[in-house]
Length: 269
Image (tube, rainbow, N blue to C red; front, side, top):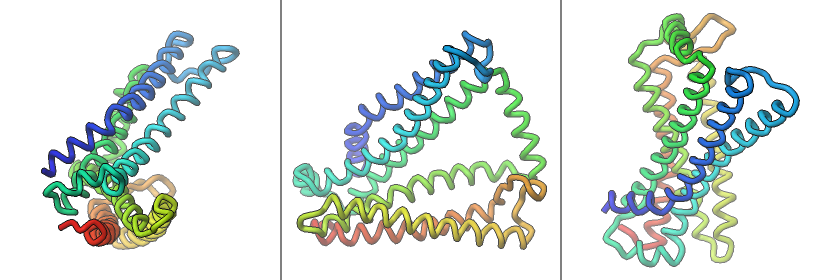
């Protein structure tokens, strides 16, 4: 049933999100093609009418990227709210599903679309660099930078895992806010929005403190690997693992708060 609910959520939100991401890709590629046609390189400066056209495309491309991210989160939040607390919930909540299955199926769909967001951004970046003729140079500099920073290739899968943890952590805001919002008799949506903002603020405070403390601790311990002083530093694997543990602990608090309220409010197992 978990996978069936995951497919159900994906089927519900994917058509609109695919259109939004498609528009974002089209605008991005259109900008690159236009610059190539006018200057021969995607990164060259342009002026006059061509510059205005190029500037507009950049603006709309960035706007579409921003909207794609916002719409991904907004549609996943609305999806969970409708599935649990509206007329649709009267159908899904009578299925033989526990609260965990209801929430985890949504979390999987949420993370899936966050990954798609990220991959689309990466694809646009690769297209840009390839059109500009510096894709090979980028990977060469990346490799040299990793060597200079003494970053082990083993840290790459850990960084990918950390990215997934961040996506899942973001999804837990939904369960915390909608669960508390459901307790209101007349202002469910307003309370949900307020509690989502509270979750975001709490997460920002905790993560900023965690980054500061982890960075300081691992620099002093000699296991924080990075560039020379004054340049960008990259956390060592231990630092990333500690950061993930902090996010997992806070995310678990959001998740289980939401789960407890939802289970009692909707009489789910």
